[in-house]
Length: 293
Image (cartoon, rainbow, N blue to C red; front, side, top):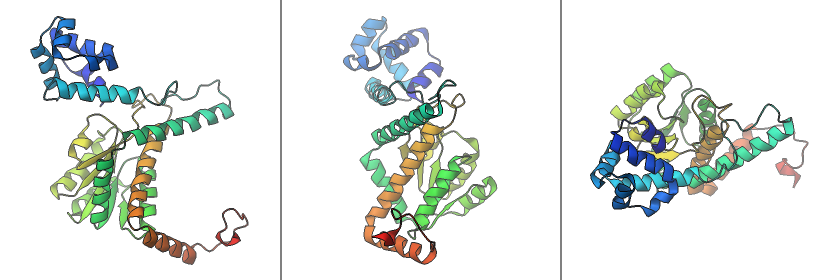
């Protein structure tokens, strides 16, 4: 859940609500305000500001302000004039729709990159590298991007599995150990069927990488490391999960490529040898034919 959404859904006293309304109105202008200035502007007191911060899960005003301004900055970058929920209209031609969806994919990729953090990515890479197997947990259409990631890893010799059937997901999670690691995909981070499986993972101390939306959710609280995806779509009012699926796939591609690069030549040789002995088919297109050169 975005911090601004949490602010609109939390019960505040009348004085506390004055602080919240001021923050939501000021947005990025808030960087110029300390507690004395906000207290003066809202006719409240610094102690009320601290209570607001603590109700929202922060230790104090500075921590709340930093998180709020980071979220505002994110929401104000990319996607200018582009609605991720309804990127095209009934009046758009097929080519106009094609152009808008292409732009949506570009903006989603830029958004995803902006959310990447070097240390967090390195930690996720290290978990994948140092554990025997990689296990993907997801629901519905996210199973497709999970299975593509598994396909890539397996074709360079890394043991990986996805569990598209829920009952199997629960059982497999219960059998994993500290020698294994898990990646969980969930845009909302609140999908109930996942948490039975995640409960088994935590009981067995299986390292967990979460790939989810920005803001606070149950999944990110359980994870050892969280990688964020572009967070522009509503839960139910979108035409399709265009933006979030693009972002999920890109994050997984980045994880795969980072792992691949750790032993680049060995992985490339493995993949090429596997392809040469299994993918025998005539290719008439010289652009994709390796032997054409």
